[in-house]
Image 1: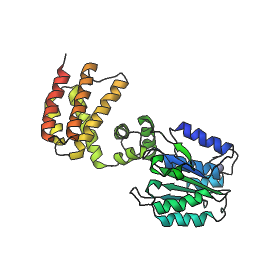
Image 2: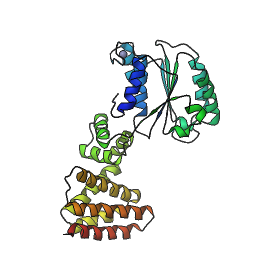
Image 3: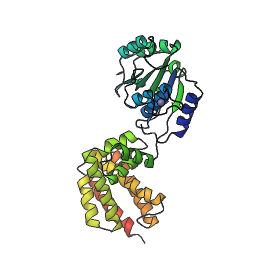
Length: 309
Ligand SMILES: [Zn+2]
Protein backbone atom coordinates (compact mmCIF):
# COMPACT_ATOMS: atom_id res chain seq x y z
CA UNK A 1 0.00 0.00 0.00
CA UNK A 2 1.67 3.17 -1.16
CA UNK A 3 0.52 6.35 0.57
CA UNK A 4 1.65 9.63 -0.91
CA UNK A 5 0.19 13.10 -0.50
CA UNK A 6 -2.93 13.87 1.53
CA UNK A 7 -0.89 14.22 4.73
CA UNK A 8 -3.70 16.13 6.44
CA UNK A 9 -6.29 13.42 5.90
CA UNK A 10 -3.78 10.77 6.90
CA UNK A 11 -2.86 12.45 10.17
CA UNK A 12 -6.54 12.94 11.04
CA UNK A 13 -7.19 9.25 10.55
CA UNK A 14 -4.04 8.24 12.42
CA UNK A 15 -5.18 10.42 15.30
CA UNK A 16 -8.57 8.70 15.46
CA UNK A 17 -6.85 5.30 15.49
CA UNK A 18 -4.38 6.39 18.21
CA UNK A 19 -7.20 7.74 20.41
CA UNK A 20 -9.32 4.68 19.62
CA UNK A 21 -12.10 6.98 18.53
CA UNK A 22 -13.46 5.18 15.52
CA UNK A 23 -16.86 6.29 14.24
CA UNK A 24 -19.36 4.27 12.27
CA UNK A 25 -19.28 6.07 8.98
CA UNK A 26 -16.68 7.89 6.89
CA UNK A 27 -16.95 9.55 3.52
CA UNK A 28 -13.78 9.78 1.44
CA UNK A 29 -14.23 12.32 -1.35
CA UNK A 30 -12.01 13.37 -4.24
CA UNK A 31 -11.65 12.97 -7.99
CA UNK A 32 -10.88 9.59 -9.52
CA UNK A 33 -7.34 8.46 -8.82
CA UNK A 34 -6.68 10.73 -5.82
CA UNK A 35 -6.13 7.69 -3.60
CA UNK A 36 -9.49 7.31 -1.83
CA UNK A 37 -9.44 3.54 -1.81
CA UNK A 38 -5.78 3.30 -0.88
CA UNK A 39 -6.39 5.56 2.11
CA UNK A 40 -9.59 3.73 3.11
CA UNK A 41 -7.70 0.41 3.03
CA UNK A 42 -4.92 1.88 5.11
CA UNK A 43 -7.48 3.11 7.65
CA UNK A 44 -9.15 -0.31 7.75
CA UNK A 45 -5.77 -1.92 8.32
CA UNK A 46 -5.02 0.47 11.17
CA UNK A 47 -8.40 -0.26 12.78
CA UNK A 48 -7.99 -4.03 12.51
CA UNK A 49 -4.29 -4.07 13.51
CA UNK A 50 -3.54 -5.98 16.70
CA UNK A 51 0.02 -4.62 17.07
CA UNK A 52 1.16 -1.84 19.37
CA UNK A 53 1.41 1.00 16.88
CA UNK A 54 -1.35 0.51 14.34
CA UNK A 55 -0.90 -0.13 11.52
CA UNK A 56 2.21 -2.07 12.59
CA UNK A 57 2.49 -3.81 9.19
CA UNK A 58 3.65 -6.96 10.98
CA UNK A 59 0.78 -8.52 12.92
CA UNK A 60 -1.38 -11.21 11.27
CA UNK A 61 -4.23 -8.70 10.81
CA UNK A 62 -2.00 -6.21 8.97
CA UNK A 63 -0.64 -8.97 6.76
CA UNK A 64 -4.12 -10.17 5.93
CA UNK A 65 -5.17 -6.63 5.08
CA UNK A 66 -2.14 -6.27 2.82
CA UNK A 67 -3.42 -9.30 0.87
CA UNK A 68 -7.01 -8.06 1.22
CA UNK A 69 -7.94 -11.37 2.79
CA UNK A 70 -9.01 -10.21 6.27
CA UNK A 71 -12.39 -11.81 6.98
CA UNK A 72 -13.67 -8.65 8.68
CA UNK A 73 -12.96 -6.36 5.74
CA UNK A 74 -15.23 -6.30 2.71
CA UNK A 75 -14.99 -4.15 -0.37
CA UNK A 76 -17.71 -3.34 -2.87
CA UNK A 77 -16.68 -1.59 -6.03
CA UNK A 78 -19.72 -0.18 -7.76
CA UNK A 79 -19.49 0.58 -11.44
CA UNK A 80 -18.88 4.12 -12.58
CA UNK A 81 -22.34 4.52 -14.08
CA UNK A 82 -25.46 6.26 -12.78
CA UNK A 83 -27.75 4.09 -10.60
CA UNK A 84 -25.47 1.08 -11.04
CA UNK A 85 -24.87 0.33 -7.35
CA UNK A 86 -27.28 -2.56 -6.69
CA UNK A 87 -29.71 -2.38 -3.79
CA UNK A 88 -29.07 -6.11 -3.23
CA UNK A 89 -25.53 -5.27 -2.11
CA UNK A 90 -26.90 -2.87 0.49
CA UNK A 91 -29.32 -5.55 1.70
CA UNK A 92 -26.49 -8.09 1.96
CA UNK A 93 -24.41 -5.60 3.96
CA UNK A 94 -27.35 -4.92 6.28
CA UNK A 95 -27.66 -8.63 7.01
CA UNK A 96 -23.93 -9.22 7.26
CA UNK A 97 -23.16 -6.34 9.60
CA UNK A 98 -25.65 -7.65 12.17
CA UNK A 99 -23.34 -10.65 12.68
CA UNK A 100 -20.35 -10.26 15.04
CA UNK A 101 -16.84 -9.88 13.58
CA UNK A 102 -14.84 -13.04 12.83
CA UNK A 103 -11.48 -12.09 14.28
CA UNK A 104 -11.23 -8.37 14.85
CA UNK A 105 -13.05 -5.91 17.07
CA UNK A 106 -14.67 -4.31 14.06
CA UNK A 107 -16.24 -5.28 10.78
CA UNK A 108 -15.37 -2.86 8.02
CA UNK A 109 -17.17 -2.25 4.73
CA UNK A 110 -15.57 -0.17 2.00
CA UNK A 111 -18.04 0.96 -0.68
CA UNK A 112 -16.82 2.70 -3.85
CA UNK A 113 -18.87 4.86 -6.21
CA UNK A 114 -21.72 5.27 -3.72
CA UNK A 115 -22.97 8.24 -5.79
CA UNK A 116 -24.44 5.55 -8.04
CA UNK A 117 -26.73 4.08 -5.37
CA UNK A 118 -30.40 4.20 -6.23
CA UNK A 119 -32.81 6.01 -3.90
CA UNK A 120 -33.98 2.59 -2.70
CA UNK A 121 -30.39 1.61 -1.91
CA UNK A 122 -29.70 4.89 -0.16
CA UNK A 123 -32.80 4.56 1.99
CA UNK A 124 -31.82 1.05 3.01
CA UNK A 125 -28.33 2.22 3.78
CA UNK A 126 -29.59 5.20 5.76
CA UNK A 127 -31.45 2.84 8.11
CA UNK A 128 -28.14 1.09 8.83
CA UNK A 129 -26.41 4.41 9.44
CA UNK A 130 -29.14 5.53 11.82
CA UNK A 131 -28.73 2.47 14.01
CA UNK A 132 -25.37 0.97 13.19
CA UNK A 133 -24.31 -2.24 14.97
CA UNK A 134 -21.63 -1.33 17.55
CA UNK A 135 -18.86 -3.18 15.72
CA UNK A 136 -19.51 -1.91 12.18
CA UNK A 137 -17.54 0.73 10.29
CA UNK A 138 -18.58 1.99 6.85
CA UNK A 139 -16.08 3.63 4.54
CA UNK A 140 -17.88 5.28 1.64
CA UNK A 141 -16.05 6.58 -1.41
CA UNK A 142 -17.37 9.07 -3.93
CA UNK A 143 -16.09 12.06 -5.95
CA UNK A 144 -17.99 14.74 -4.01
CA UNK A 145 -20.20 14.88 -0.89
CA UNK A 146 -22.78 16.92 -2.82
CA UNK A 147 -23.57 13.78 -4.84
CA UNK A 148 -25.21 12.22 -1.79
CA UNK A 149 -28.36 13.39 0.03
CA UNK A 150 -27.64 15.48 3.08
CA UNK A 151 -29.37 12.92 5.30
CA UNK A 152 -26.61 10.49 4.33
CA UNK A 153 -23.47 12.63 4.22
CA UNK A 154 -24.36 14.51 7.42
CA UNK A 155 -24.04 11.19 9.28
CA UNK A 156 -20.57 10.54 7.97
CA UNK A 157 -17.17 11.92 8.97
CA UNK A 158 -15.89 13.63 5.84
CA UNK A 159 -12.37 12.97 4.62
CA UNK A 160 -11.75 15.18 1.58
CA UNK A 161 -8.71 14.26 -0.52
CA UNK A 162 -6.73 16.69 -2.65
CA UNK A 163 -5.27 15.98 -6.08
CA UNK A 164 -1.67 14.81 -5.90
CA UNK A 165 1.21 16.87 -7.33
CA UNK A 166 2.52 15.62 -10.67
CA UNK A 167 5.75 14.60 -8.93
CA UNK A 168 3.79 12.40 -6.49
CA UNK A 169 1.83 10.88 -9.37
CA UNK A 170 5.13 10.16 -11.12
CA UNK A 171 6.47 8.39 -8.01
CA UNK A 172 3.33 6.27 -7.55
CA UNK A 173 3.30 5.29 -11.22
CA UNK A 174 7.00 4.35 -11.11
CA UNK A 175 6.37 2.04 -8.14
CA UNK A 176 3.26 0.47 -9.64
CA UNK A 177 4.58 0.06 -13.19
CA UNK A 178 8.38 -0.11 -12.90
CA UNK A 179 8.78 -1.83 -16.26
CA UNK A 180 7.36 1.17 -18.18
CA UNK A 181 9.43 3.95 -19.73
CA UNK A 182 10.38 6.67 -17.25
CA UNK A 183 9.97 9.51 -19.77
CA UNK A 184 6.51 8.28 -20.61
CA UNK A 185 5.59 8.08 -16.91
CA UNK A 186 6.63 11.71 -16.46
CA UNK A 187 4.50 12.80 -19.39
CA UNK A 188 1.51 10.82 -18.15
CA UNK A 189 1.94 12.40 -14.71
CA UNK A 190 1.98 15.87 -16.28
CA UNK A 191 -1.33 15.19 -17.97
CA UNK A 192 -2.96 13.44 -15.03
CA UNK A 193 -4.37 16.44 -13.11
CA UNK A 194 -3.26 14.80 -9.89
CA UNK A 195 -4.84 11.44 -10.58
CA UNK A 196 -2.45 8.50 -10.25
CA UNK A 197 -5.18 6.25 -11.66
CA UNK A 198 -5.34 8.28 -14.87
CA UNK A 199 -1.54 8.40 -15.21
CA UNK A 200 -1.32 4.62 -14.89
CA UNK A 201 -4.02 4.17 -17.49
CA UNK A 202 -2.26 6.54 -19.92
CA UNK A 203 1.14 4.90 -19.51
CA UNK A 204 -0.33 1.59 -20.59
CA UNK A 205 -2.13 2.96 -23.64
CA UNK A 206 -0.43 2.47 -26.97
CA UNK A 207 -1.79 5.72 -28.45
CA UNK A 208 -0.49 7.67 -25.51
CA UNK A 209 3.06 6.47 -26.20
CA UNK A 210 2.68 7.75 -29.75
CA UNK A 211 1.23 11.09 -28.63
CA UNK A 212 3.92 11.61 -26.02
CA UNK A 213 6.52 11.26 -28.80
CA UNK A 214 4.63 13.76 -30.95
CA UNK A 215 4.59 16.30 -28.10
CA UNK A 216 8.36 15.82 -27.69
CA UNK A 217 8.84 16.31 -31.43
CA UNK A 218 6.91 19.58 -31.33
CA UNK A 219 9.10 20.85 -28.47
CA UNK A 220 12.29 19.74 -30.24
CA UNK A 221 11.35 21.23 -33.58
CA UNK A 222 10.59 24.57 -31.90
CA UNK A 223 13.92 24.58 -30.06
CA UNK A 224 15.84 23.79 -33.26
CA UNK A 225 13.54 25.89 -35.47
CA UNK A 226 12.75 22.95 -37.77
CA UNK A 227 9.82 24.23 -39.76
CA UNK A 228 9.37 21.12 -41.88
CA UNK A 229 9.45 18.71 -38.95
CA UNK A 230 6.91 20.81 -37.07
CA UNK A 231 4.55 20.98 -40.07
CA UNK A 232 4.91 17.23 -40.51
CA UNK A 233 3.91 16.31 -36.96
CA UNK A 234 1.00 18.75 -36.98
CA UNK A 235 -0.20 17.22 -40.24
CA UNK A 236 -0.15 13.77 -38.62
CA UNK A 237 -2.26 15.10 -35.78
CA UNK A 238 -4.99 16.32 -38.11
CA UNK A 239 -5.99 12.69 -38.54
CA UNK A 240 -6.07 11.92 -34.81
CA UNK A 241 -9.31 13.34 -33.36
CA UNK A 242 -8.93 13.53 -29.58
CA UNK A 243 -5.21 13.00 -29.90
CA UNK A 244 -4.64 16.46 -31.37
CA UNK A 245 -5.99 18.11 -28.21
CA UNK A 246 -4.09 15.76 -25.94
CA UNK A 247 -0.78 16.37 -27.73
CA UNK A 248 -1.24 20.15 -27.57
CA UNK A 249 -2.05 19.96 -23.88
CA UNK A 250 0.96 17.77 -23.22
CA UNK A 251 3.24 20.12 -25.17
CA UNK A 252 1.93 23.04 -23.10
CA UNK A 253 2.64 21.22 -19.85
CA UNK A 254 6.12 20.14 -20.91
CA UNK A 255 7.01 23.74 -21.76
CA UNK A 256 5.34 25.15 -18.65
CA UNK A 257 7.31 22.85 -16.36
CA UNK A 258 10.51 24.15 -17.94
CA UNK A 259 9.33 27.71 -17.31
CA UNK A 260 8.43 26.94 -13.68
CA UNK A 261 11.80 25.34 -13.14
CA UNK A 262 13.38 28.47 -14.68
CA UNK A 263 15.03 26.44 -17.39
CA UNK A 264 13.03 27.32 -20.49
CA UNK A 265 14.32 25.69 -23.64
CA UNK A 266 13.45 28.83 -25.60
CA UNK A 267 13.95 32.49 -24.68
CA UNK A 268 11.26 33.23 -22.09
CA UNK A 269 9.37 35.72 -24.29
CA UNK A 270 9.16 33.18 -27.11
CA UNK A 271 8.13 30.39 -24.79
CA UNK A 272 5.27 32.46 -23.36
CA UNK A 273 4.08 33.26 -26.89
CA UNK A 274 4.26 29.58 -27.82
CA UNK A 275 2.12 28.69 -24.79
CA UNK A 276 -0.47 31.30 -25.80
CA UNK A 277 -0.63 29.92 -29.34
CA UNK A 278 -1.05 26.34 -28.11
CA UNK A 279 -3.91 27.50 -25.89
CA UNK A 280 -5.57 29.32 -28.79
CA UNK A 281 -5.28 26.23 -30.97
CA UNK A 282 -6.79 24.07 -28.22
CA UNK A 283 -9.73 26.46 -27.88
CA UNK A 284 -10.28 26.43 -31.64
CA UNK A 285 -10.24 22.65 -31.75
CA UNK A 286 -12.58 22.37 -28.76
CA UNK A 287 -14.91 24.69 -30.68
CA UNK A 288 -14.84 22.20 -33.57
CA UNK A 289 -12.58 24.27 -35.81
CA UNK A 290 -11.25 22.51 -38.93
CA UNK A 291 -8.28 20.39 -37.85
CA UNK A 292 -6.29 20.80 -41.04
CA UNK A 293 -6.65 24.59 -41.03
CA UNK A 294 -5.87 24.81 -37.32
CA UNK A 295 -2.75 22.69 -37.77
CA UNK A 296 -1.53 24.82 -40.69
CA UNK A 297 -2.28 28.06 -38.82
CA UNK A 298 -0.48 26.78 -35.74
CA UNK A 299 2.61 25.70 -37.69
CA UNK A 300 3.02 29.18 -39.20
CA UNK A 301 2.37 31.04 -35.95
CA UNK A 302 4.69 28.83 -33.90
CA UNK A 303 7.56 29.36 -36.34
CA UNK A 304 6.93 33.13 -36.18
CA UNK A 305 6.98 32.95 -32.38
CA UNK A 306 10.34 31.16 -32.21
CA UNK A 307 11.83 33.60 -34.71
CA UNK A 308 10.91 36.65 -32.60
CA UNK A 309 13.88 38.74 -31.52
ZN1 LIG B 1 -0.67 -4.65 12.71
